[in-house]
Every structure is written in C-alpha cells, then in structure tokens.
Image (cartoon, rainbow, N blue to C red; front, side):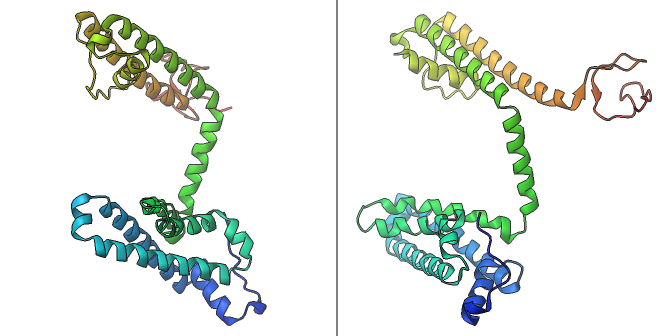
Amino acid sequence: MYEESNNNPPSWGARRGFLNRILFESTTPLGRGSDIVLFLLIVASVVAVMLESIDRIRMQHQTLLIALEWGFTVIFTVEYILRLYCSRDHAGYARSFFGVVDLVAVIPTYLSLVIPGAQALIVIRILRLLRVFRVLKLVQYSRAGIHLLYLLRESWQRIWVFVLALSLLVTMLGSMIYLIEGPENGFESIPLSMYWAVVTLTTVGYGDISPQTPIGKFMAAMVMVIGYAIIVMSISLSSDRNFKRSTPCIRCRETRLEKGAAFCKHCGHKFHQH
C-alpha cells in the first residue's frame, strides 16, 4: 500500500503541497474532509450503477443515470490526475494498490463508448471504499485481519484435509444418489448429483432436485444429519483450542481447563503456578 510522506519538499511548490495535504493526508481538517466527501461520492456512484440495473428505474430515469455516471467518472478522473500531479512519487502512486484501483475505477465508463454494456463494470469502484479504514481511523481493526490471516496460514493443512475429506464425501454421496434415483427422477448425471449432495449437506436445500424414492429420501435425511454433525464438530474443534487436557484438576479430575486459569471453573480448586 502506498503511503505519502507528511514532509513535502519545498521544491514542489505551494500548489502541489496544498493539494498533497488535501488528497493524501487524513490528519488535517482539509484532508479528512476531502476523504469523507470522496467516500460519499463513491457510495453514490455505486448506488447509481445498482439502480441502473433495475429495468423499471432505468427506463424512467435513463437520462439522469447516464448524466450521473459521466459526472462521477469526470470527478474521479480529475481526482486521479490531481493525485498524480501532487504525488511526491508519481510512479509509486500509479503502481500502488489505491493508485491502480483509482485508475481502474474510471476505465469502464470510457470503455463503454467502444464496448456497449462495459459500464456495468463500474461496480468495481466499491473497492475504493477501502479508504474508509483511513477516513474513520479503523487501522487498528486491520490487525484483526492480519491475525486472521495468521490463523489461516497456521491451519491450512487441517483446512485442506477437511476440504479433501468433504470432496470425497460429496463424490460418494453424489454417486450413491445417482444410482438410487437415476435420470428419471431428475438426477441426470453424477456431477448434478454431487451438486445435490453439496446443497443437502450444507443444509441449504434449494429444492430444484429432490429424491422421489423411499430409499433416496432416507438417504437425504441422513445427509442432512451428517451436515449438521459437521457444523457442530467444526464449532467444537474451534472452541477446544481454548482448553488444555494435559493436566487435569486433582480434585474433580476435569480435563477441560482454560489456558492460564488460576482456578478450576468446576470445583474452584486453586492450581499451583509454575
């Protein structure tokens, strides 16, 4: 992520320094105000694109929506040019994450002049809402995201084993229901039957295809129970990370003891601190 320096070299000139404080610094009143205005413009532009996808609204307010689309595009284009102009490192900003997002956010409207319908890609402007972390000073919450990525990296082997086991289970269940029901009951292929297994196992239950035979219905019920069992097992395993089992309480022999606890939560026995 690109971060602009707070110290503007005198060689920039007063104009560039003033624009830099407005567009890159959120600690000043002008910088924070510009970030909030930009945030509101981004939200409004995304809402306008969503409204344009509704046929009734597009037919009634097509001219207004087109005008709004080009208006937002012109504003964001000028903003991007000004950021390049006042940036200390032009290439650094252009190659940064926000620099690329700012550029990509204005391309679809111009592209629609050549490719009809390309303006629908304007919804990628929603990526610019990531600036809310700076606007609302939510940087501390990004640490939670970093911690989550760390946990995923530490648990990736168990995750892949779980995904592999689930894939094998879905393949087996899909093949079984295909043999039981067959194409005459809507299970036209094993991949389609595997889709049914995933929908049933996750307890979503779209109902677009369903078993018709008694054996198939019984199997569907068992798959639903297995799905709930997997959910409960996942919750149980995640909660068990907060307990240790190596040394039980000498009074009540409880093994599910919280890490770092000074007393047993079941009988109140005081543990010896090492």
